[in-house]
Image (cartoon, rainbow, N blue to C red):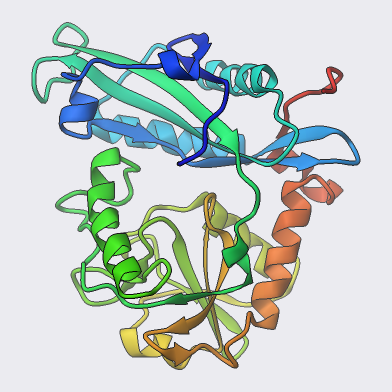
Length: 312
């Protein structure tokens, strides 16, 4: 996250961006001992409102990551939600926002988890982030780096330490002239990208790796599966995907809070379809943005308003 803002929420307080700090001996820094969520809030100009997308589901996944890490902090989901709203209002955001709530182990005994042995804390960083130009299509590749195994460093846990694996793959792809790569798991099947889930279209069906394929259990992924089935009447199949299937896919895209719906137009120098975003990708991309911005009444329950009666 390269952006900045005026304020960060840290351990119950709004603090200046430049003053938000933890000690250099914190386990979060030394060993990557933290978990986080990547989340989005979308601006609706007509309503002068900012909507957090699927807040409850993201906080549930954060709790699951904390549970597996045996990380306890004194903040409830309601506390976090109030923190998001307070932070966005303090920063006076009137455009799309990308934000990250983080729970971490601080200073204490190495590899400890009990409160008597180690400090814990939480912070929320947020900054304005418009949709990326890559939403028009990217060139991807299959990484030589394999995705973390669930029995080694589970991708199901959205932990900072896991993103060393992601960094290796991302840097390699950039050096080779590609955008975000596709990673295979230890079984040689398609897993996900360094920071987003993968979907493809073959013969009118959407196909995506199962949650047992060493992927993060994506909130956007889950949302798109529901929308394809309920709103577009498209069959979605969750199954293993072989590498060579990528080269004969009709359409392909990444999805996630950061990636949103990111069409893939080429993989390993093979064109995907006709080399342009396909119709089922474009339809779900448009529907996703309409819902996230509060334009579809049926899905308002997925959204949490930030300003309410206190319009900016």
